[in-house]
Length: 501
Image (cartoon, rainbow, N blue to C red; front, side, top):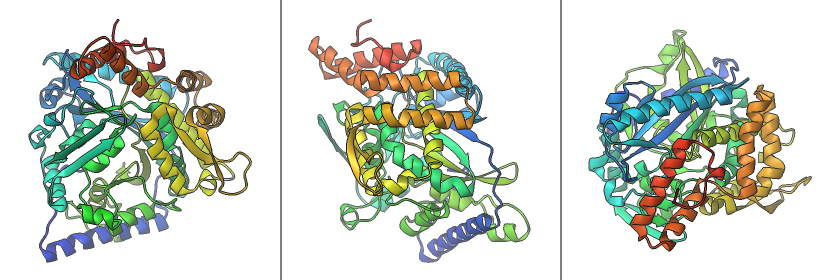
């Protein structure tokens, strides 16, 4: 969200000035697009993973400042909660042995970080939501020691005017009123970045939206929310509700939440940034005094600090990103759908599936977004979050000429249609066939066995309950076993059932 931020200004003239600065940034973006100032195709991808900290018993540790001090690497940064941190992998070109290279870099970095965390009796856990987290663990006092998080919390709470209501019902129901946005910190995700040219942005973003449900179905890893078994991927409903600054009356009127799937297919990147200004008031402002239009008039490239900061407080599951590298602007699609974990191999398999699939779908002669109604894509996303690997999705009828859809089990859709497309997409990127087959094979085996991180967690938890453990004991035992298997590193579909060794 930028290094120097201040709270949104609320006296009338200051708010008008801030809105004017955002409009200037949007106008500058339009000029950059019209003048074709953006970087040429480079086939670059990037990867970020949010992580949890736990102790040897699987319980959360609020120690990220101490752990980061020992790691002492710019690749690792704070996240919202004191039990979180994030690792960033430098951009890579999507070609050759990139998947194996990413896996090796991740294993090396996470192993080093875990050793350093051990110096303060903590360990790194890659999981969508740490099952042992309790609601009392995430209050405003557990936010990371960073002014931007404090300011964001204050402004979101002020905008809502009352407690945030968390209410998610699945196998069980969790309901809780929070006086801060801190419950959002329970959500730890993988963010997949893909640099695209303006001309290809809409096709890639639309493709990413269309396949978000399939990503969740095969990659779900967050079935427990503060001790309750709710959705198979509980991050999206928790994240939406923990950042929902709308009072109930505004929600009833149809005001958009700041975390949302979207409501339509797009034709260019500008539309998403324009929607951000049209639908969402700013929460934070920058101290930067850049005049982006003057910078353009003088032949420079604006950083668009205000526009970028505002974009960072709107949590689309596929988010547009504007950035400048080496004096040249570029656009990225940031895919924020997936949970962290369970293992490095699983993370890279999910990445291979995504990057291959969006490449293939973005280049189809009859694009998926011409055949699948957006409402069906959005409904698919919710269905996959609820049901995970057992989800049944709506998908265009094979060979159909209209927007008619049929119901199909997600595992069958992935095996019969999406995995072959993903393989073709990875071939188009120039990824080595051995890498392609290894990592897409992990996704195929999950579908064949109907096992992903969420299904393993649920089965192991219930096995522990059947052995006589109470709820908290079973969650802790399952989490400890998860950590053991995560460190061994074999993909989750091969994990032995249950909590015993």
